[in-house]
Length: 159
Image (cartoon, rainbow, N blue to C red; front, top):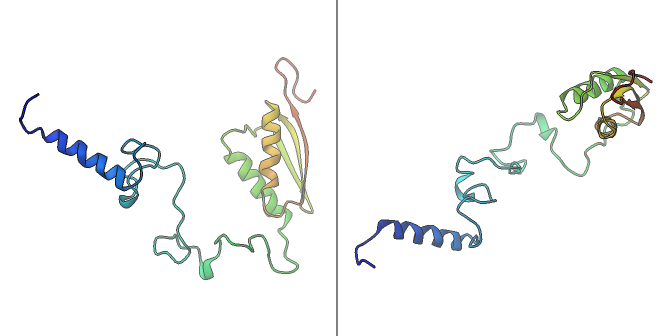
């Protein structure tokens, strides 16, 4: 062992000390926490965004009066308000189109007084259930009638 000063030893000691200060002794430098919380993510991706309070200057603008801010009254609209079937149809079609795990090319959507009817074919049972779950999450949908059929390889569509 040499008595020469090795600058790498000082860096290792500082990194270890920093992890201890942050309570991360068992984690590597930028392990699961997505970076140093004091300095953002350090250029690394983070799985979930950090929520900001509605009054935070970093919070995105949400319109007059904080429209779209999550709270205990989400989903409670004005008395007598209901979404039109056309708006529900548009929303359902957009969400089915935008979902990456669902091929919606053979799905037909019908909306009558807030009730959505899905018909057509999908490739798998999981896509059939996924389509129903997507539609059920649309505001204004009161009922989902899932008449989708799973297209089996080697059979005619719709049979």
